[in-house]
Image (cartoon, rainbow, N blue to C red; front, side, top):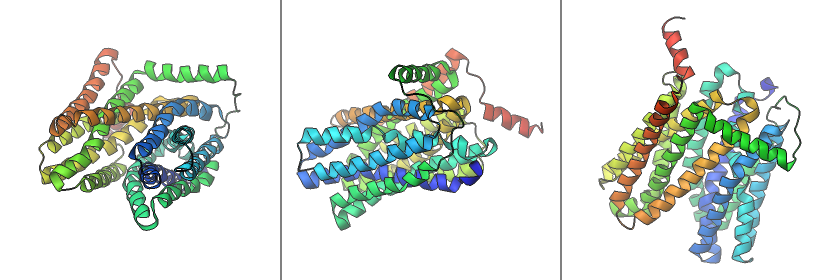
Length: 407
């Protein structure tokens, strides 16, 4: 089965779906404001989609792990997400706000299928020996989506109108449905969907993450780091307005960060065993802390350098996180772990954005410095768990040592 499903097909589907997802957020904001004339309605729609994704991720992970053909469940989730976007678009300005937000919540529930749900299937696509490099390539699709999604949203809205931007994002997600449908089977019989058994599996997945020290360490580090990333995302338009002369220029810096993340991961893909994933996790957080301190200086060149540095820390950090999850998680719990992790990171990002929104009214440089402190806290959390739990050596690092020793 693996020979009939290529890595190229996997990457194409994942990149297409994730680009549509990255496009959908800005597109909804633009459409909500253009059609309804209300920034409050636009932000409510986006909040509904985001919050629902954070809630729906763990449940979706359990269902993926219980399915004999997880690709078909993944395809259904993608189709539901794409259809929901179109229903929201049709309802804006025609239906009451509360109804549109409810539709947004339902639309967001399968959102983690675009991130953790896809990545959890990767070991079924490639042999174990090639998983390290495939993991880097998979992480690069996130950077590519982060680069193309917002740019496509703005471009489609400018040329065809804000409503067309939402439609294009839905089409991109829909194009990935056939690719997801053909994903390799799990090789296990399907389990029933009784509510009690699903809840037991859900709790078992949470306990597994908490009780596996190396996985818990990686999860906590990444979630705390996402707090800082959410703060940076909010600060960039404000920094752009103050430093570069316009909020739009600050938003465009997100594309610069995505390019930097892609470049760093492309380099890592050529030497997948050069750095241990655990090392990349804590070092990536410190690199992002340095970037945020640099951004706080308020100088144009420093701001550009800060964004490039932040991407160089974030991109490999995501790759390292995926590597740890693949190494530490048994196949029958992989969907739960990946989607739970995606939901936690999304929650951390949202909390960071909310914190920055309040703190920026006090001091923009101070908010950047606070975000740098959060990234330092992420690295500190890594070493605190290491000290408290005596986490074993990264298996990838041990393999590299044996290889260098000729054993």
